Each structure stands twice: as C-alpha cells, then as structure tokens.
Length: 226
Ligand code: CA
Image 1 (tube, rainbow, N blue to C red):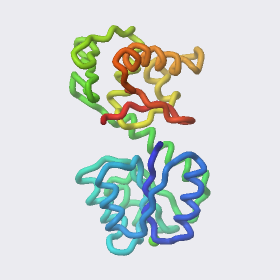
Image 2: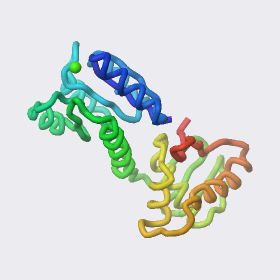
Image 3: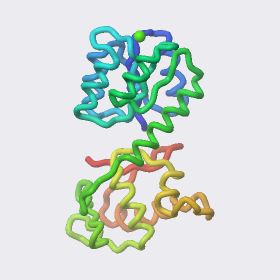
C-alpha cells in the first residue's frame, strides 16, 4: 500500500485529505508539526509527503531543505493562495510540485499520481547486479540467481523482473510496467503483465518456496527488499 505522510497543522484540511486518500486506497500518516514530519520522512518508510509551508516548530521549507540532504522522496508543498514566494522557494528547495490551498481533491490526487510516477522514472540504478534478498539479477550477463541457483527466464520475464528489482520497494502500476516492459506502442492484451508475473512466480516463488513479488490490489506490483 502506498503511504502518504501529511504534514499539516490545520486539522480541517488534514482530515479532508486523510478521508479522500484513504478512500483512494492510500495509507495516511499525519502529523501537525514540522519537526515530527521531518523525523518520519527521514526514516524512508513513506512513499510521498504532502508538506504544508506554514507549520509550527519547523516550517515546511526548512523541513524540505533538511530532508533533501538525505532523501529524494516525492514532496508536494501545500501553499497559501498567492504565496508566490513559497512556490518558488519550495521548488528551489527540491519540492516535486506544489498545490495552492484551497484545492479540489481531484487536483491533489492527480498531482500525487504524477509525483509518484516521476519518482519511478527518476529512480535509476547503475549497478550491474541488483539484489533483493537471495535473488540477484545480473544485467550484463543476463542472468538471474536465487540462492546460487540459476533461473532460466525468457527475455520479457527478465525485463519485467529487472524493472521491478530496479524499483524495489516502489509499487509499479500495470500501465507503467507495460510501458517499460513492452514499449510505449504496445497494443496487446492489458493483462499481459499479470500473465508474466504469474510466469515469474512459477519459476521463482513456487520453486524456492518464497514470495518475491507482492500484488498491491487495485494498484500493481512491488518487489520488497526485506
Ligand atoms: Ca499551516
């Protein structure tokens, strides 16, 4: 489940955002001051932060500046109407986006989706061998191993596994997986990803009695690095 941290001291707004996000299937963690918000965001256990600018203890811009020293987690700033300076400072300090209060919930949801997607694209791993627990994937040798056993995969299975492993701990939607595994111009069956996930599970999970790929209902798939 995608976890969103809401750092906002106006209870009414927090409550409104929380209800809507839960309704959309997100998990919500809320705090009402900047210090706590920074602490939680730094732990890296949330997928996105909605960060108000005017906050007690530590203001939103300061939270963002400190957070960016250690984390590239998507951050959407919540700014007051017409606070142009806040927007500019926020983007300068590394915010992915901002939204002006009051906002329509649809707009916020769209921005959240975009920010999460952007993150998927910007996560780039340069290492040749990617590891998740006992599973390792060698991009150069085109080889997948589980606990010293080689696993034979077709090209497409390999590509799909590589995408999931390169973005480990990030839930990838079917659309994103199709685009990356089959190409932008793919026009075949939309359940193709489910089919290949099943093949991967048959070759890895069933054989080694493990559970590598997690289904996130209504969203997509993720490989978690335990
Ligand atoms: Ca505030």
